[in-house]
Length: 340
Image (cartoon, rainbow, N blue to C red):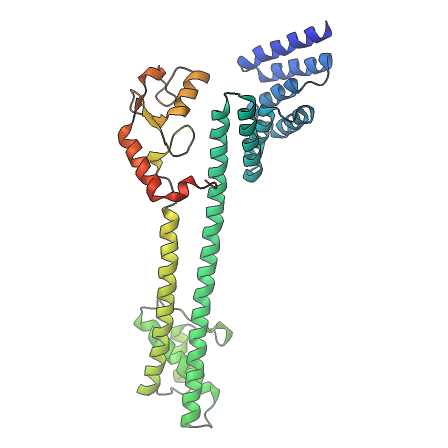
């Protein structure tokens, strides 16, 4: 009698759940646990209520408790996957969704499509985070390399000027070499409308205008002969070439990265993934066939976007979009990679 009473309480909880009375349902599952003791189904049902209430710590506790009682409980694996999505721990979420899908095959359960949708979402979110980190690292690397090229250019100029002065007059001071370097760099900055900046902060931190004034007032305005100026221009051109080659390389990386984005018009509005088998509704909205059919069977007989009555027989293959999708897949092999 106790077991039957516990089951009756559980069924009452299920009815509350269907009526979206999640707290009442939780109360019933609590009572069922008291009547019948530890049963995996009570914990997993209560975990689903907590998902609806977005009480994720309790989702984790109940799903884990369920797996302690039954390691092969598919829904518990799926709920833990949802928990980890909310924690933005996508690697863990993917692991649990894959385990749930494997159990669906073994147990011949037919709710794998929803788990597959959640798996794809977790993979997409993980991919987005990886791409964001990759972009940040590339920007940092590009900035660092630009700084190295600029510093190397100024060092080579400084050495070339010092050699020039030493050959011309060994008694010349290093102050003159700095003056010449400042004069030349100031000239370069003016030539490029001040688009080129110098990194002489380690030697002297002055603006171009101040540098010109200082040169006239406190330092010798050293004349730069044609041979030295040509040598400095060669160094400048060499540095510019290195910067251009670096920018071309990073631009190519950026182009390849942009190609790794699925255009929105090829993405299903239900699973957020590429529509490999697109069908169109009478209302002009296209979905993945599996997504919209599952939605019609399990949720309601309505188009989820148009919110109008819809049945499976009204779905028509979107052959034009399917051809575009197939071409996109052929040109973007990464679509089929595991990471996305």
